[in-house]
Length: 286
Image 1 (cartoon, rainbow, N blue to C red):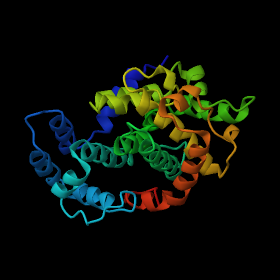
Image 2: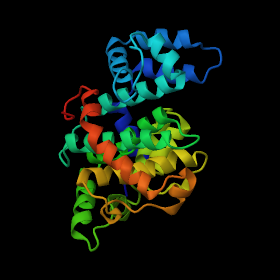
Image 3: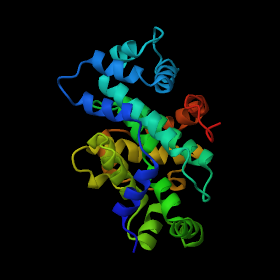
């Protein structure tokens, strides 16, 4: 039987976040670090800075004034939001080179960006939502799949085929559990914790199929759970909920989001996904 901890450990030797990102992650939670300190660290990575500013100036954020420095981005968005966005941008690039013969990376990231856009929109509709954090959680919710594709390709292929061949076409995470004893959400959560990502992000990744299992961050988890279904509806251009992963009632309860709002969010995500994808400037997203 494969061990999810061992899989994550193996992948962590192949895929690592830049040192700059790890330092930013630590500094945001350090009361001795100022916004200026964090800005100086971000600015040390020219490529990351360019991607962050491109994202901050996109229609996604709708800034009134041009954000032309990291300091301005921090002033407008806040240190935690800048931290979350640098994490997301860096993780996408880190995983772009992982070998995978099972699915198109273009289709994988298309779904992920749809989920990110939907999660950001839903968080904005919630009283205590954090749009930038939810955007990154949506973007990375399926990173455990990439770990499984790379390290357990035979079993992953079996699970993918089972979703097609088995009666009622069960969801992928259920097929993974039957074959592996665990699923991609568990693996993604383990990787997020190994990378010392914010606990809310790790929890949203690990429980995005089962929001009732949320431990400390039920709202973050519920938002990504709803966003995942909205992303699938956007992909298949449907307004029929049976065409998407089933939604647990607790997600509606925790967020206060209605089914009508979710359909509207799916439509908006579908309309804006190509523009948002273009911001990431990486192979497979164009």
